[in-house]
Length: 118
Image (cartoon, rainbow, N blue to C red; front, top):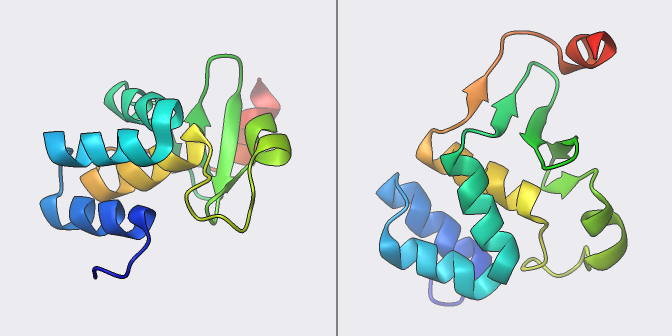
């Protein structure tokens, strides 16, 4: 595993630990900076929600759809290099973290139906 990129490494460590240890928090913060810190906060605040069709992260101004490691936020669209595995927006990071620690708030409904009600 020593040849793994830093993202794969912390994800594997988190998968194994099943919780955010101080070492893993430090690693996520080092690799992802402020985005990593914001992702950890979002997980702790229960802002990662999964529906039948999408996984959503509740941001400060809107809700963002995270699918296959990609996100609908402007940060992903404009600032990040899709070919660099360490460049992930905090929404995608939050989903990766929440899934590994079991902190995804599951709703047995279609997000597309919920979104129509808003």
